[in-house]
Length: 231
Image 1 (cartoon, one colour):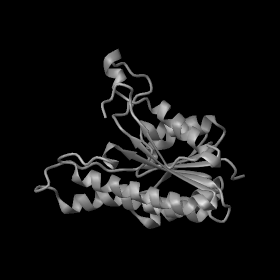
Image 2 (cartoon, one colour):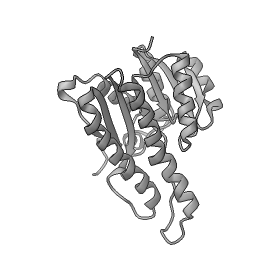
Image 3 (cartoon, one colour):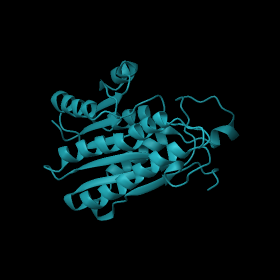
Image 4 (spheres, helix red, strand yellow):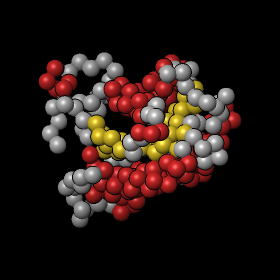
């Protein structure tokens, strides 16, 4: 029952939804989760999936999510942490409480999801654990200290897990999404503006392709950006 189960944590109208549609189209039973699970009901119906409420900053929420997915559709062999929290502002004005929450969602939440996924996959010695990064994973912009801290931490987590779990046949990968993502499925933007945005369906296809990589040629990190993006 659990040979093709995908769990996507942090699903919104952009990349999260595209990932859900991609893996459902590939024949996976798909579980989707967000802090407000009620917003996912329409998408769950469209992909014949299961929607859950989960605040990734809370370890108990993540534990309940994995237990529910195991009960409802089986042990996931693809787990994607796609949750993050943005916070901008000058360093001398940032609210420490908001900074802490940003780190809890983006980095600590990634740890909670990654640890739960590893615990599920290690006994079977198979599976993929993917983390969604950003430009901020490798470049700390001005007035973006909290987001950069979270994404740098998430990248370090992914790199460490990749080295630890690859010998156990568990593929861990980090995706640097270097650019803005188009949210709507049917964009009405002019051609030049459209070229500046990443297509979420194209990003999702890359996740699916990396899940299918032969283990003799795994990648732990990939960068994705529009062809017109400067870097």
